[in-house]
Structure formats: C-alpha cells, structure tokens
Length: 360
Image (cartoon, one colour):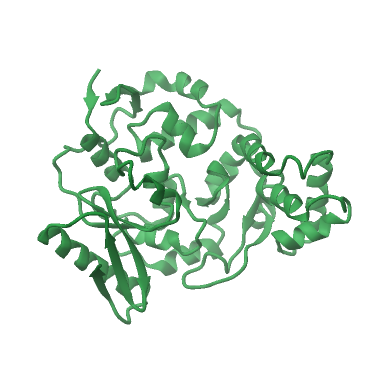
C-alpha cells in the first residue's frame, strides 16, 4: 500500500480545501464542496471564502443568507456551521442523536427527570407563530413548565438538539451584528428536514463528500470532523468505490480514486485562515497542517497564517492593519508574500479604505 508523506497529505488537503490556488467557484458551490464552513464567529466565513475564491464579493454570501440558500445552524460536532439549505435538510436527521448526546454531556444533571419529548413540543409551540426567538427568550418561554430546572439548559437542548433550527439574518451578514435568533428550519426554508432517506444512505453521502473535501483521511478523521460515531458501517459499504493509502504513522487512509493528490513539491501560497477553520479542525490527526506544539491554537479561536502550507503564525486585524505574529522566523521571500497577501486582506476587511500588514 502506497505511503503518503506528511507533505503529500498537506498538498492534498490544500487542494481539496481550495487553498492551493484561488478557485473559480460561486460561494454557494464552494460551501457545498467544503461540506459547510465553521461559523461560531459570524464574520469568519467571509475570510474563509475570501482566502479560497477568486474575486470573492462578500455581498454574495450575505445575499445567500437572506435568500435562504445557505443557513447557520448547529451540526457537525454541535458547532455552528454555515451550510447550504440542501445539506442541512439532508444531513440534520443523521446528526440528531449526536447533538442530543453532546448537550446531555454538559447538562445531564440539569435536565434530569425532564421528558425531552414534552420539552421539544413546548419549544415548537413557542416558535409556531413564526416569531424568531433568541435562545434565552425561548428558554424563558418554556421555563414555567419546569421552574425547578436550569433555564439555560432548557434553551441549550431545545436550540442545540431537539428542534432543527437556524439562526436568522442579520446575524452572519457582512459587517453586520445581531444576536442569534432562531426559527425552525422548516419554517425558514419552507421544507421539512428529510427523514425519509435511510441513515446508511446519508452516512455514505457524508463519507464521500468528506473525502472529496478533506481526503485522503482515516476513519478517525471522519469521526473527528462529523462528531458521528456510526460511520464505519457507511465506510464499509463504499469501500469498493475508494482507494487506500498509509500515512507515515501506519494509519490507513481512504480516498476517492480521481480526487486531486498534487505533487508534494508544488508550491503553496501564503494563506490567512479564519478562526476555527475546518482545514485544521476537520481531522483527528492534524499533523499534515499544524505541528504538535501550536496545535492548541486551532481550538482557541486564533486566526492562523500558513507558510508553505503549514501553520506558521497568527494574525489579527486592528485599525486597518493585519498584524502577523510569527511562530518562527520567515525567509525574506516568505515575509514578502505574507505582507503582500496580508495587505490585500486588510483592504478587504476595511472595505477598501486602507490596507497594510505588519509582521511583529
């Protein structure tokens, strides 16, 4: 079985994640290809698409949200993702057990002795009128039924697991604030979540879509990205459609036969990733893109820069400037590439007013 080096995996990841060169894709198609964008921080998907797409216009993403073609919702790993409406409707049911398990892992004691079916019905009753509610408003609206229980826990389990809901604009629009307010996905999209497709069919779709965007990857990587424990069966059912490799640690890696696996020596541009980007978080073994020592940056909400395809520093935007904090020294050429691309990012984030970058 062919062994793929860390650098070979790095270049494959960059290619699948639309990071090796700017992609000529519409934002909707890019979001679909990437299986969604991590979106806990509402403005970060704009940076994620800017760094991946040629000529990205942030107004296009805002329009996708207002036209209900993409949505913000809890899904993979129970984190907020920006997804196409089609993927949410198709995938939500397959994630329900995981979503509930993760909420109960935090609030099991607070939710003890509560009939979750009754709680879900109460939440649906509150939202049935079509009026968006924040999580705290929804919690207060149902809390009178369970006065001895934590209102916070009630709101978390309703919004995060029991009812398929989406966060409504203006939250998530370009350079726009707004509290997270929710409506059922079926109300917002005019279609019910798909409960007809067998779980194994959705699982197979998830495996194949994941490998297209993240492969080559191990089953543990698929589990880490999705938060789902039950995908080995789906993998088994599509194995005859996949090819296998090994990494340098001996793990089996699966991939689509015709997916891009670039030459490891192909150059990689200087890259600026948003907070919580799935190019890093979408794996159990992240060594293909980040060293062990700075691995904590990937879960701490730090925005990172990639040099030669690997995490080499962090960046912040302040007063019209992108400020880069290196993890190690850069060559003159690397520094020049970072300053050039960082200035372009500063111009994008400032709305065309100023654009400069500094390496600290």
